[in-house]
Amino acid sequence: MLQLLRLTFLLFFLGFVAPTTCAQSLAWSPLNSSFKGAFQSKVLAADKQGYYVYQSSGKERSIEKFSYANNLIYSHKLPLDDRNIEIEELVVEKTGVTAFFSIYSPTLKKHGLFYIFLPHQGEASTPATLFDQGQINSASRSSFKIMPRSDLSGFSLLHINENNTESLGLDIRFYDAALGVERRTSLFLPHEKTRYEIREVMHDPNHNLLLWMYVTDKDKRSADPAKFYYKMVRVNRTTLELEEANLRDSVYFLNAVQPALDELNQKIRLVGFFSEKDRTTIAGSVLASVSLAPLQIDTIGLARFDLEFKTKLQGYKNANRSKELADYYIKDVVMRSDGGALLVAESNYQTIQTYVQYSQGFPIYREIIYYHYDEIVVVSVNANGTIDWRQIIPKAQVSTQLSPYNSFVSLPTEKHLNLIFNEEGRSKNAVVMYRINNQGDVVPRIILSPETDDAAILESDAAIVGPNAMLIPATKRKKKGLFRLTFETL
Image (cartoon, rainbow, N blue to C red; front, side, top):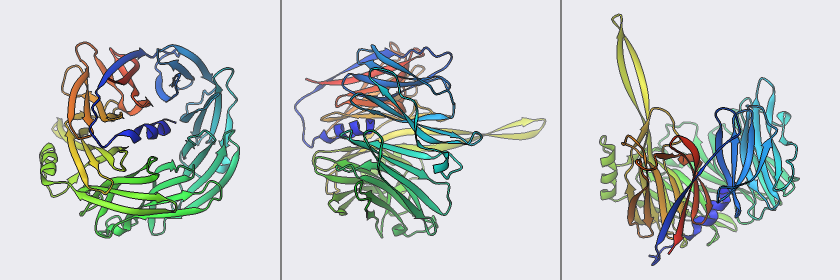
């Protein structure tokens, strides 16, 4: 549901300078739990009245709804005590919410997907199965994608079976609002010469299913860019007919390309990088436009990064300067109202340091892996693929393990992109925000001070809950809670 909210709010980043300014407010709400011992919490969805939080201690679970004034509206204890259960999705409806869960336990031979309906008033339903052990041919946990329609008239469900080495199996089902099956089909993509990887699943404006795949040659060392490409497949929810459109180039490698639905212009925009060398480096940006009737790629625009921009980025790396850049990954795509897009990427890589210790004269080698989350790159790309402006946001985060406190969150408001992250290099953490307007001008500020707040945000669990508001899970003075960041137009 959060993805549907997000797509709605991203469409209004305008292509002209706005005369208005915004004031920001940041409100703290502690998260408490009746569970014994440690517990996990995650914001799942939101509506006009409040937001929904999933809490779990492993054997005890609940879904609670809070008002934006942090008052508990209701709490549903879930009859789920199996530690092998994971929540997959929560969909907000008029009379309640539907929570989808997967379970995987090879020793108990439990493998499947089920749901529970939680009404706004009254008791929760009993769990109902959508997929069970007999319908899944996989020796590992299956991957499920559940997508509600924007008008809440039904759902699409994709089950990805990657256990078979000979093919990628896709089970596709379309459900009505009561989760009755409307249509179902299966696709098998052979792995004889190529490999298929599902990168994104979404709906078109008519609620047909769109599958965005990355297709690679079995010989990954191939120097032929045409053997590494992207494929979009549309499954018609009424007729089950298939349409395909391929994004490929015979000269350039197309890397990290992501789709975004441009509802204002009734197009799909494909945004990413390209390279002349290989599938890991970047020389510039690419933006392609896809029409929906029929499904086909209309235009492809590529633009190289200028020398000054590349020199600045290479300066951050401090070594191994080359003609192309490496280790940048797209974290977000923000649609502009004119058909262009903001490409938001982050430098993300690992380094290894080896230590030698001696025990009784014998060397003992120990390796430590450092995970780096460095500068953010924002590129504003016009609808024809040319670059409007680009910016570099300085950041240097490093840890010896994967951490939810690393990376950043982005909140697009009407005329600004707001990037928020934990700052490194202090004894106590500061949370900083960089505001970028639609001409690329940047204003940095500290929004949580280490002296007065002593807080750190969990970027991976942040959730957009309105066109100018975001909920960000955090710790404040070692207590769990949420910050509600809102912007008011002055």
